[in-house]
Length: 208
Length: 299
Image (cartoon, rainbow over the protein chains, first blue to last red):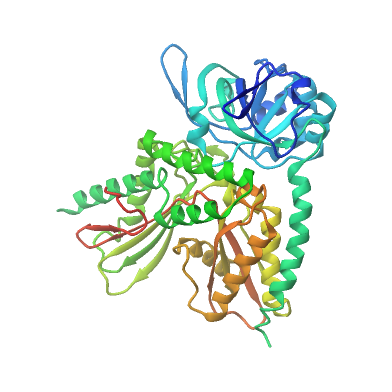
């Protein structure tokens, strides 16, 4: 569901396709509820190996990240530091991953491409970025690590299922209509780049 | 103090300094980020800067690394030939990284190539990277420390241009890299450019350029002019913080240069992310130290 608090728009898990309808690229939102770290090998296991994901991410959120975790007593863990990793590495798997798992929100770093955009449009999902390099802010939004699965993958790649509170800010980079913020921006950037190359080149003819 | 005690002392000091640089940004970077933050007015840029500054405050308060990617450690050493620990220096820097890795903590970022396993100690064959500049007739030692994170290492590139491509070719080489890889490298970036005679000379200079204080300029008038042109040009592309759009994309552009072969222009680009974790410490022969990058840092 969607709630509002102190001017913040907060998605609370479980999230429905309907909840994503009024969310558009460039919007700033927050997430409360179930967020599971999930990256390279976990995507490969689900998509290529056809294994069932051991944490239920349906109508919940995943985070492309490899955190620093401190083990506590009684099989509990503390999130010390967590920041997003480059989402593009998961692009190859993301259409099938979203289709299979029913995940609603993907959080990561930088843009993704048409595989993910198509999945967002076809299955009702969004991709967001959390400003990178802010590992302490992100770790402080984690209230508790509820479970850890596929631990054989080691600390960075384990599925750390977290209960988060107002995790963010999250900037929507692909919305459920399939619009892609970074891809649209890149067209602008490239046009301006060509103009700047011409402008600078006119002033650096040092070899005469 | 005997040699052994001195080695231990310098190892401990370098371990503390490395750990400190992972938690607090240098003064010049903070000042520049404050300046750029004040000049941005879009809601996205503002929320990104607010997050960055809150993160840096929390990192100091909670005594944690500000970014989870604490990089591969790189050291640029300018060592006097008379510095008493010149023989032990490379070994003690490696020990200092191991010590800092467990004390800080730092992420384990050394994967042995070909054997492809993580050493679990943050050091390996050739890591930390140590570059040497030997200074004759001096008994001190100056060390730049740098945490080279994965995101801002990726845009690195070097090539050799034909002279016909000229400095216009250098411009295109740098700007192309900004719109392809720069977006994901955590802008606002510090951009280092090496202009020299071959790939390795240019590449080394492009990283060395990132050690210069922000706001410094090349001594060569034309190179300084090009630094300004590239800075304004990259900003005008509008990539902004985190690549999401904004007025300022770079904290600066630094060019370092050497002479070149008449038939070649070696050019390289290297970038530092906004979390530019660079430190600079100078030791005298008795291991009294001066830190130029971080006011208030005591080891």
